[in-house]
Length: 219
Image (cartoon, rainbow, N blue to C red; front, top):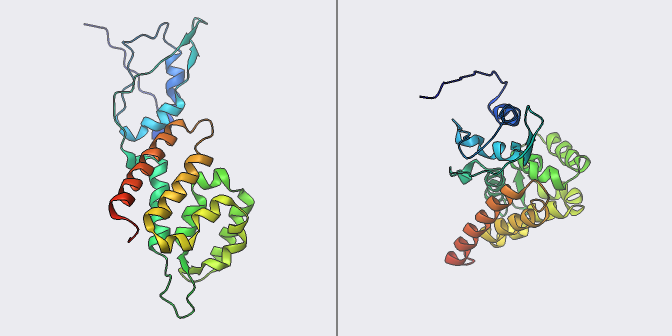
């Protein structure tokens, strides 16, 4: 029976656990196939993947190259890609296009704020432009905002053009989702550090494309 060495380390949050793991690994003289990192919460898998280094220097000063074998699945619903898609789905579904006499398209203010504040949006849209949109939305005292009120800001950024394309929302819900996801996949998740999230987004695009192909344009 192996001698057990159990340590309890206090951290401020669940994600902070994953940030501490590289420091714990450095305490090992050797890391082999018998070293396991066991998560008590599967939601921490992605933060862990981003925290794990390719190489560490142990307490003896030796550099050790690391490779990992992930044997647990990760639910797509927990990813940043899924949360982004849920936001743009609500943005399209909650619009009030065609319900008013002036034939304008109105968007839910909460959906606009969620879309512009998401991490993917903040990666591609400048903070100044994002703050301009937030300022306009926050001045509104009603739940629905005329899409034209942010048209100037939307026109100045390619991602915003795709995300707030109300005409595409009207034509085909699946095509709108696929269009926005493709833009994010090709222009945001192509950057270094997004490899894992890029795979998740590709899977979502594939699902919606199959959905589109099965139902056609009449949705």
